[in-house]
Image 1 (spheres, helix red, strand yellow):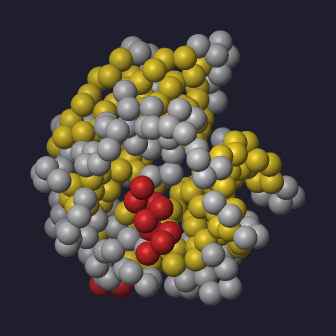
Image 2: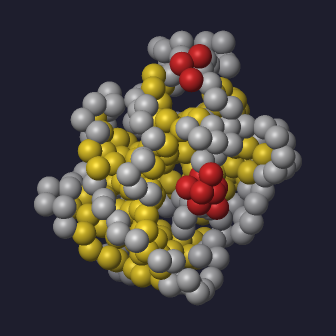
Length: 298
């Protein structure tokens, strides 16, 4: 399901403070984490992709042309896919190297735009959404030959009972069907057995495919993070991960060791920017550490 905030971003780019190269971590060096987090940050007219790790005193900007959002790591960590809105077109899908070099446009959407890239398990294809004259399609494109295929198609009257997006586990054994209504269904790819989960936002698989994280609720504000354990087939955690009652949280992403989760929280309405938080699952404590949105972790 395309998150409400992502769609708002495409229309006006997330309203967050312009920090530029002066961005710095708020945790004063007390926050530790492994790997590298990629995220978006910017303002009404400009948003860019950044990376940060625990050794940096400030994030590194990877893009500087157009409005750039929705970054996501390739499975091997060598590339980043993202959505970019540049002078010559509406939103389209791009890929680049992990250091920001070799930026390449992937989609060419006539009479519409494309958003929400997600990598296939082998890193050779990209899933994405397109909107052509008001019709939403979920597609997949082969990065070697540029051939695209439509997986699902919805018109302007898409109903709440229809699947809006799918998320395959890293080991390819399971799939999450995310409905327009916020309903989530866990599907065993081998047996096709289904398990109805509680309603919520965009889900994220742990790297080992053993757990699933997403924010509970049909509507905003969502700030209760749920963690579903596939081995135990039950929820093992439901925790409030924001100090504010009216903050909306979204876009969780797991660390490589599945011990931490990075996510975004921001006010449902009114002033104030959106921030990245990290939840440590060993202590169940969360830390607000950097302005930004839509993180992914490698």
